[in-house]
Image 1 (cartoon, rainbow, N blue to C red):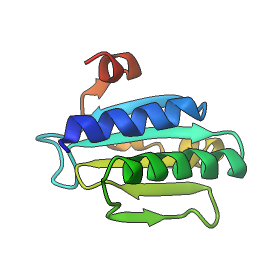
Image 2: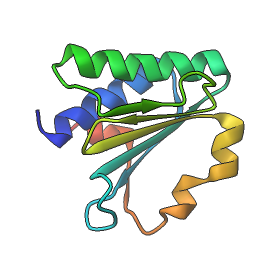
Image 3: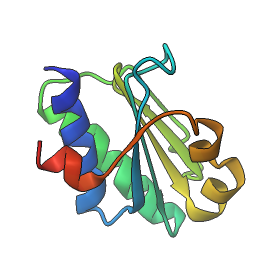
Image 4: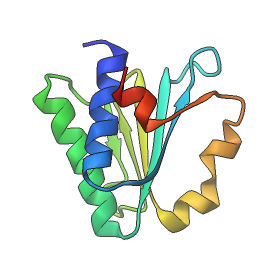
Length: 118
């Protein structure tokens, strides 16, 4: 499975669980951590957990093993590491506080439509 397929699975899963403000950062040439960051949020701990579990389940159903899943217990900031793609699912309050989009402001952004229509 290539990184674009993983990105598509993650974005579709988050979108299907009504994740808010899905932002995709193209990290190629910006960071060695991953090729893409997917950043989104839910409005409650339950929604954050549901989004994270959906991403995890869809990745595994597609034959892709998770490298790491952290934060699901509190569901305030869940990190899902799919190797080339890292998904950050925040509670809306935590997202405002950490503001990863500003931290990684030099990374080009992509829209959900760009990912799903490619």
